[in-house]
Length: 245
Image (tube, rainbow, N blue to C red):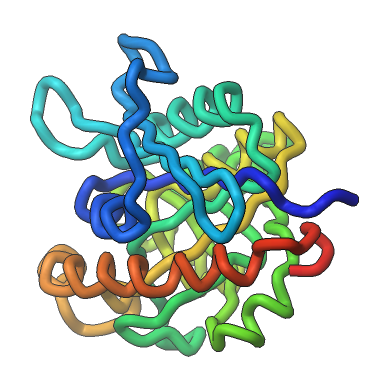
């Protein structure tokens, strides 16, 4: 197996992406690598001797906010994988964490596997499809080297959750709740491209603060944590094969 030479990092929010893009001195791809009308934006450069590409989901033209959620994430990752043909894809961003699974504000988690908590289809066969299951690339050496935590990541299209969502997340021992990674993992599965998530905790899902308030309060700090830690992930990956992570 050859060493990792191309890495694609997928971000949903500009506030998550830009500190990392600026830190790594990446340049927006001009002319655009992904053609309109797709709203996603790509940036490219070098990191530890590897080609580094970033795709950000872009802005909603109607509401002027970030294109968060599984649909824009699937579109952006599909088009970026087609364009760049990466050796590995990383879903990077902020997320809610479960204190019952050892999460605290500011923690960095690496995904072990990925599920959906809001695709509830109570029909035999479709029920399993709805929740889904994708395995992330095992990264035991990376986690041990950098001191990151690991856990199951669950994606849904709402910042809040229903009682049934919580039931599903609890049954799957979910440690991280967010809005994109499971969709990106599904796309990576189509391309047979290795995948894992790197998530910085902004809020405690099973805590006593309102999710939206805690998220906004900690978004900037969590984005800075990604800026500080993602380069360490890339540095560790350099010169290694996927199996050596």
